[in-house]
Length: 487
Image 1 (tube, rainbow, N blue to C red):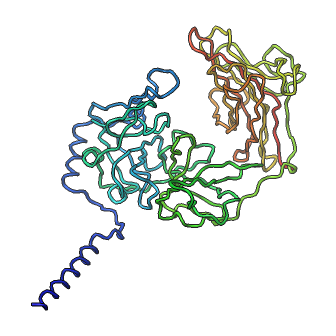
Image 2 (tube, one colour; image 1 turned 45 degrees about the vertical axis):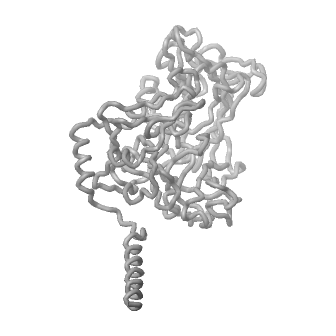
Image 3 (spheres, rainbow, N blue to C red; image 1 turned 90 degrees about the vertical axis):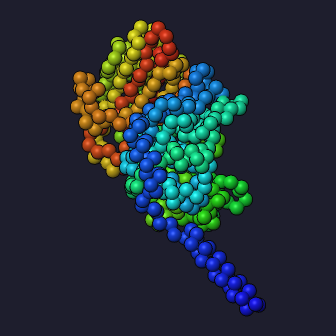
């Protein structure tokens, strides 16, 4: 009798070990097939609903329906039509760095849009593995934000409301099963290659790659997560940009499995998902895995300003004031409307003071709904030196929703007839903002042109107008334009 009890005990122990071994999550193999029920649900969706684009789905949500400049009136949009979006999962919670959320992008390569799904479920990486093709049945769900004003378009459940507006809540287990449907396809997510300065709201949720980056100098010897923090740790990434650094934040969760890993001290590449801080003030990168960090190269070195000479400069002094700029190799061209860039005498206290001649364009009193005017620099031979930078100062006088773009072209032929048909690429220049005092002048920073070659032109493109309604008639001003080249 005692022996039988002992044998039973042994069998129970063996059985418990066996059962435990069966559910161990050490095998991260992604299931390649779907259950019959899920497969039927997907087939029914495809047969009865209409696919829409991510941008269409985003446009359904109006974060400021009262047009009063804040989001306290935000109302998540309830989808009633039979529509769905198809995308590919860009995030993974396998390492614990994402929590109850999925990011999906509209293509596995070169995506143009992405969204977030908030769901009350953890450990999603097997069911919703990175790269999995998913179909999100939007019918009955809501499109909005988890935090009003974040501009992170999120698919969720019944909204909640407070003094800050309406936000979406997490999908429950049943909603996940009914609305987030997998196909049997998993694709490799090819990271979208960007620089820090190119990342915008459009990229939130996308898997991206940034090259030639390193952790800030003062982080040597530290780990991804600071043990004195409670939830997340922000570590500064930097990338050499001529004479200074472009910086960005890498955020790591206290629940991540790699939180105690040492930060690499070299330079290289990082692949991560673009997201935002909890308060949505700043963009961040969030890792799926430290396997996506490769920083074993030599750290980058900043350029020495003493190695550069001014190869061209323009302060507009001596130009005929009051008429369109046309001397010293500059081209002014009114693409739409008749108002154009002119040389004017400023009364501003700065830059360096009243009586200084500047380039100016404004649409006020033009009596034209749209004014588009170009001010194009003399040509630059970018093959004459190894590295070039452009620098200028800008000011405004009540910008009133008008816009100033800074562009570069290497295929413009120098004629006004072909300005609009040439290829123009935006330069990452700092341009005066609408909230800057009208007499203040803002430095553009040193804008690196070394990625371009051949004969180039830099253009200042003004977009505004003087319609009967709307304020798009502001003035922009340019001065102290310089091209620096390496000696």
